[in-house]
Each structure stands twice: as C-alpha cells, then as structure tokens.
Amino acid sequence: MAITALPPDADADIARVTEVLAMITPRWNVRILLALSGPPLRYSELAAKVSWLQNGQLHPKLKALCDAGLVERTEHTARHVTYGHTERATALLPILPMIVTWAEEHLEKAERPLAAIEQIEDSLTLLTRRHAAAILWVLKSREEVSGRVLARIVMPSSDWTNIYPPLRQLVADGLVDTEGNGQPYRLSAAGDGLGPVLGTLSAWAAGQPLDQAARHPVWGQLRAKSAARPWVSSPSWPAPAALPPARTTGAGPAWHSRDLFSHAATSRPTAVLPMGGPRR
Image 1 (cartoon, rainbow, N blue to C red):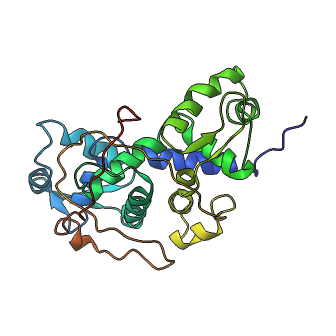
Image 2: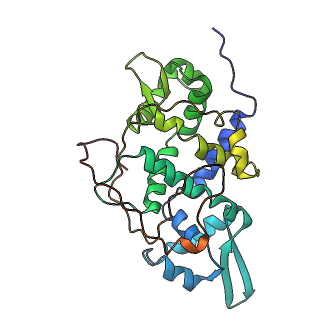
Image 3: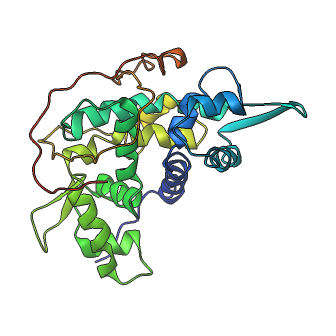
C-alpha cells in the first residue's frame, strides 16, 4: 500500500523545531537565559546569578548560546564586556510559561513542590528524545499508525525495526499510547497536549509571530482530551528562579522578565509516586 507523505514542508518544520530544542535543552542553558532576562550583564555579574555553576562551566555555555544567536556579547571597551539577550531570545522567552502549563497538567505530581524551571527542564528532556519530534509529528498527522508504517516515514533508510526503541521510550514517557505488541500507535493526551508548545516553537523557529501557532498545519488542530498518563521527574538541580505558571488563552503570557527571579514556586499537592517509571 502506498504511503501518503507528510505535508511538503513538514521535514523542514521538524528540523527547525529539533534545532531549537537542541539550543535550549543542554544543562543550564535555560537558567542562563533567564538570568540574562534583564539588562545586559558583565561576566562577573552573570556568574554571581548562576553561582551554582562550577568554575569554567559558564564560559563555554555562553559561547554556545552566542553561536546559537540567543545571547549577544557586546565589547564596550577592552575591559568592559556585557552579555544580553538577542531579539530572538527575547521572542523565545514567552514559550517557557507554556511549557510550565503543559507540565503542570500532564507530568506526574512530585513529592515536593517543583520550581517552574525544573518543570521546563523535565519537559525539554522528553521532547529531545531521539526521533521524538518526527514521531510526534507523524502521529499527530495520521492519528494512528503501525510501527512499520511509522518507520517508513520517520527512518526510511534504516531497518524498520529500529523504530521500536524510540517508540517504547515515548510510550514510557507517556507521550504515545498503544494497546500492545503489533497494535498501532497514537498520541496520548499528554502528547496531543503538546500542540501549543510545538506549534509555538515552530512559529518561533520560522521567524513568525508566536500567535501563528494556532494556524500550524499539524499542531493547530486540537482534539478532545482523554485521560493523561503520569510521568515522574527525578531529583533535580538547584532552582534559583521560578516562572509563574501561565495558561494559553490566546493572550500573551502573564509574566514579565522582572518576575523571573522574584516569583515563588507554586505549591503543589503531594502524591504517592509509583515505584519505577520513567525518570531523568
């Protein structure tokens, strides 16, 4: 049976979103971006804000963010250099509360309240699994697909059985559902709930206004919600800042850069966690 291709621009769309995720997911990158959300800072001032970083860790992180076009290094004089957001980084920040909103709804409640930055980092870990973006795109487009068909779309030059390790991981992460071996795969409620996040990342990566996410050819279509599958995060790193939770209602995020280091983490009810389960 012939396989219907994804929309012609889908591969480029997936590649752009994957590249964005690769920019911001590495350890500490989001925290550094948040630390720079105010006026430009000298290196020593920034280092004081991210003091949990060990000596020698900040400089390569800053260089990578500069290379990615998210941080701008300005040399005022030989002894006066500052770092600040580029316009692209400023445009990216409103996506972070959207990730917090998704995490609050779909990630399993932790034993202690989690700062928003931890919610963001846990969520980004799931989205950067190998082949995750391509698999999620196909399942959203097709609704229900067998493993063999999914492999022919996502990894056409590989043995089709290679699709199963990333698929099993996404099932364990609660983003994909299946009834069992040999049964088709579909997005879970949590996977489908990523629509606003992935659509907005796509709009940002394409240089479009973020409100274009609602018109995304794949993720702009929402479906009725079903029961979500829980996912539990692991013990986390220190959290110096918390983003206030934001709900996507069509309006812009209800937070400002000045709130990033002053807003306390929202309290959450504790829950008894099951043994095992996917962990970072």
